[in-house]
Length: 257
Image (cartoon, rainbow, N blue to C red; front, side, top):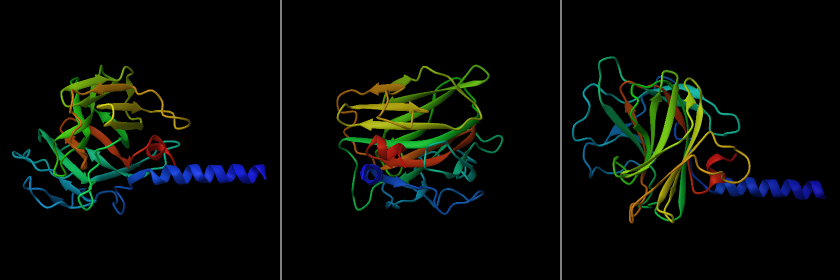
């Protein structure tokens, strides 16, 4: 009887965590070499393309910066999202950056109350600068921009990298340095109740939500706008991969089975 009750309890926990998952498997049906973006928003008022990777609207697109393509699979022990990823980097000689967005809204729904989590895997083999540069964001616009939580990365010396989190003008860097050519699990938390965003780097995947590695607290009203998209910024000078995204409304939903 005790074994049956224990099994039932585990099943309830698993179902509960899945119920908190809002979006997952964002690269479903993609394979290595496929172009990521299915379309490009050429105006801020362009009709939304739901559940689709698109090129973000840009007043001055970076010349020669085309849609990213799909690359190798990334895995992280204990994290259930797996499969192909998105390649970082541009052809030699191309400068600047390009934003790709995945819409979160459906039938006008906007995520603007409580807490939300965006989890993903990243693996960098090269970074071009010691200055912080954003590569992932929770966006208040489905065409890109209006970010309400950004993840940054920079080169630390010759053989390490560092991550940071930001909310509008506020930024906070995680204290530890991390290795190149290693797959890292990142979790971005957007907390509307506390008006802050947090970053977890390679967190433990058992137990309750741990202490964040970096927290950026916004000014009053910084999180007034709701979340409408996941935004990925590709940059020149960067090499590596990002993928295995999950959007959830609880810690268990973000990292659970």
